[in-house]
Length: 178
Picture 1 (cartoon, rainbow, N blue to C red):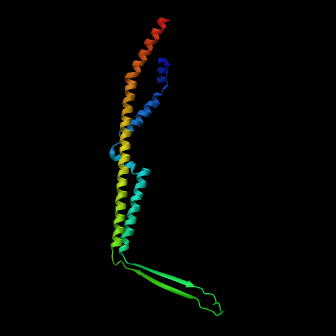
Picture 2 (cartoon, rainbow, N blue to C red):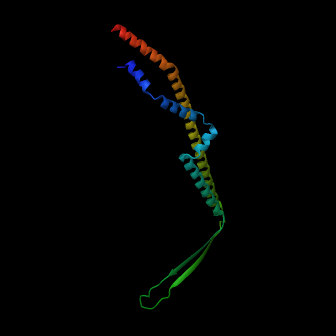
Picture 3 (cartoon, rainbow, N blue to C red):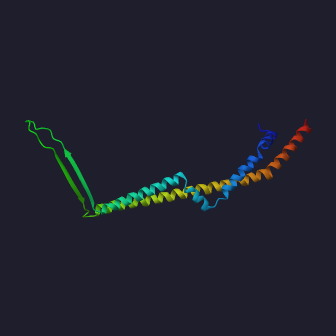
């Protein structure tokens, strides 16, 4: 059962300082401009994660481009041998190998570079989408904050005085009828 006098009491128990603080916070959110929002969102964890993915794809692209360059390598090994089954001694042996890789046909490297560049472009697009999504969420929050401020002002300036007048008239009616 709804009692208008209890409803008025609930409104009267709300802290006006708390409501004003909420209104001030909502107003500061609504007053942010797009440049400030973009700057702050660049430090958002989702934005930082997508930035790191783009950087890692750029490194992968650089590594794929390095396959066009001839590669050099040195390998060394040493083998210790036991005596032969008939008891004669065998000498130990060592080997050194020099490797040299020259890309003669570059089709394989071309495919790797194209794939790495496509992955980098994909990561860059995902990063842009992440930033746009975060900006859209902030804009939605700003709009919601503006609506809350309007509702707060409407309740405080128009509805509360009306309801308090109705409560007084209801109380007068109940005292006259009793």
